[in-house]
Amino acid sequence: MANHKSALKRIRSNESKRLRNRYQAKTTRTFIKRLKGTTDQTEAQELYKTVSSMLDRLAKKNIIHKNKAANNKSKLAKFVNSLAAA
Image 1 (cartoon, rainbow, N blue to C red):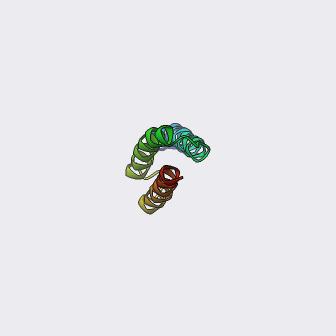
Image 2: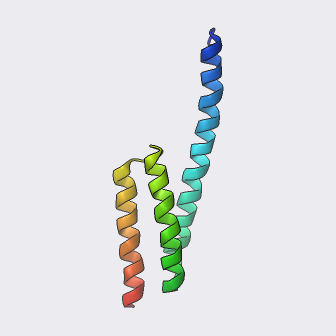
Image 3: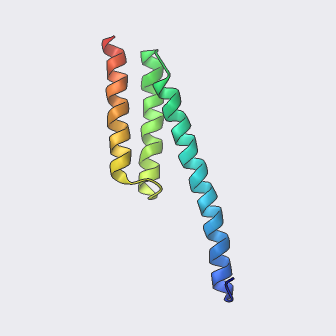
């Protein structure tokens, strides 16, 4: 166990940040699943805007890697465009 006040505070703040990051990442994954489950093209485009901004925010805060965010956005854009073609 930590002995210094600053170390105790760091433990508390790290835990709250961990929970916040976990919540944001889980919410983003839920939105991605919702987007993949849609068949309506206009709804998919609206969801894509939301999901891509969420992914960018996670990458900016280093919750996920920037390349992972880019890969997800690319795959989802392909999916949304395939709905337009169908």
